[in-house]
Image (cartoon, rainbow, N blue to C red; front, side, top):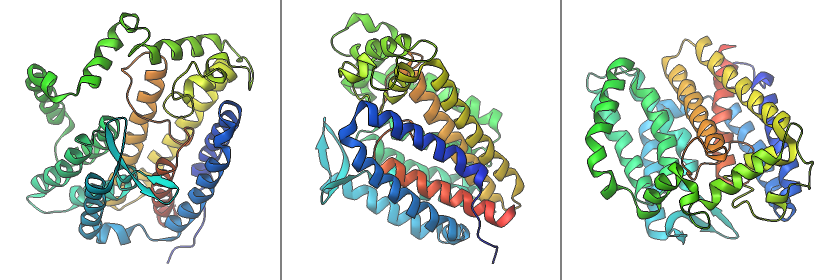
Length: 346
């Protein structure tokens, strides 16, 4: 039994990012600060719990854990509450829970276990195991979470399929799907792609989010307007200023300097997860950590990218910084499992 300890090179970036998120949230949405503090308290408890547990428990029980995750995900289709035309959340008392967020670390562990197995049919098992949750999440619809999980799945898949062959397969798939993408995407998703090319084609509709975000980021300057002084976020011109567009709020109030600090903390965190993946002799742990690193990298890039107009608007939050409970609990499980890996091999 390895001695339990906390990997401070993993924890310090998380604590700093969470503190900055709370600082900005207190400025732009003070009414949410009490709820967010309770979410962070839950984060600490869940993180310590999964840090103390041996991650190999979940890898050895990957299929039972996978089936429970799928059942949990399916319950949303029958008992979920509808918000803005999407059924992604379960109402539990006064709280709403997003199953697709909670199950991500467990699905990644299943994918890693399959990828590291010596089963001659592991590729087909992986494709089947990945297809089911991705399809359910897509039809909720939740394109953002679907894409994030897809990146983690593809990272695991590179163990089975050489990256060059996977790139060719993905490129061929994109080419084949382009003629029918209009039938697959929902109306609002097609509008987001159109607005991404020219947000001013619908400045008061679909382009409003991008335009206001660009104004907020640009007005921050080098050191920002100061906490509580951001016009776009304080006057509510910036939609979803505490979740999807919190990076624009950070850039407006803390400026370019604050944005660089956040990006640097993310880089430190991702580098530490990568280093942990390289120190383990367990292939499952290696694949799992790399999947988490790639998934977080994608999520960070997409969120910041849509805040500065580089990518289309997608419902993807900024890890540890955006407000919300389900995302934080999911991150707590991931970081706890990574810390468990670090406990055993560092």
